[in-house]
Length: 535
Ligand code: ADP
Image (cartoon, rainbow, N blue to C red; front, side, top):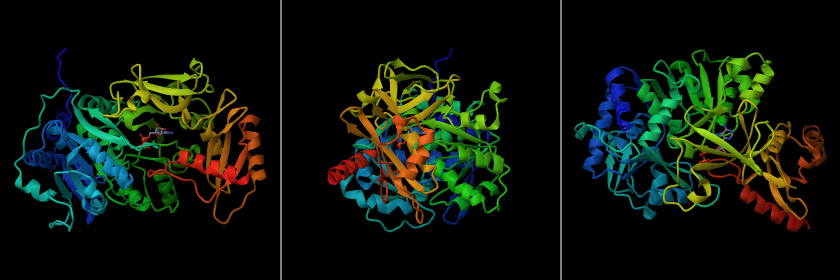
């Protein structure tokens, strides 16, 4: 067979060649704007040329700080198209972490949305960037303390379109993204041309996301987090119509976009879909065009899957992945011979994260080696494959997560007889009590199912006899009240006795990371203080 290197530029070339009339629709400040793939191709080639003129060379990092829209899409292809590295910066990180990753990646140029300028201005003295390109709909540059600044559209007007670099090694880095670590600084992941092309192919498989030319895809998941799950790359390659939601969208805006543009596939995290469900309650929308919603990033509650499917007839697909895995690796679809079970059982299966998509491999390591596929034994999920990272970029923490050719995900799972994995915890959060493991996530979900509970987090505290024991921290809903005993009565029928938390502590709020995940380390510290004070 020919040894042809996989290269991202060929993906855009295919869209230009075969789908020049298909569109990218972006929600911008003054409404929706439409560009054909022919226009996107031309603009991308001009951006590539402008970056070259600014001195960007092969291997240089170029950062983006932007929402989902056509200009960000152009950057997705122009930067790797000249052999440089697209560094998508998560706008939700703390200013300190934003400065850290810009410096750690050594970004030479930044492309910034005008409304996000203040965040970068705040860290400008701590970073060393040679040029700032402002992405704006206004003909004039906004006032800014950054320098030197360039107007995105002006740069494009002055540039001549160029050809992409295609004789790159397929392992050459094309993109990078930092994960929001719960301890220490964010960790960088480099994506190769090869990884992105193969991951895109996986998104098109019939048993995975089945993305195709006939789809109208709405990536709600941000392009600054795990490449919007790779959808922009795959959509362009397949000639899929793309709908980009832009800045600061609300559930109402999403519902309107989905109806108006006849979206067929939308992808995002559970909180987005929870918001949409509330909006749909108003009964104002016709979303019959939607053939599936893709949901991942954290566990999709069974009740949510049921509501979308039974109330609104919208198929709901649960998936799992992480920044280190491009991200799609596991997706929940019933097998053909699982169709005969009851609706309730089907929901139970599909609420699990699912099984491996073709192309990647897994093993699950428990306290005594590989776990049995019995749906009960817990172990850490390990992954390998052509779109799984093999290290963190210039980071000595690599050796903790990458061992013997596997990525140790830090996710604790069970595997059922059919190979469906269920995430039960993070390795650092699972409670190790008397040689057995207790899932903090299961206890949290049970507590949060109580009608008076707003939020619940369960953490381990050291114990002289059992090594660790669970403590539950509960935030009560406004206007509601509940006692400790009532909560214990509620939990007792659902769990073995030794799973029950040793203590339930009521709090005003649970500390969270900048991306909204529970900050359990902080919580453990607070609890240590709490117990010292009550003793
Ligand atoms: P972060 O920057 O927050 O680490 P990632 O998107 O890389 O962002 O987070 C990946 C983690 O999110 C996984 O390791 C896992 O713990 C969690 N996760 C992702 N998808 C799911 C899912 N479907 N169900 C439960 N947890 C999930």
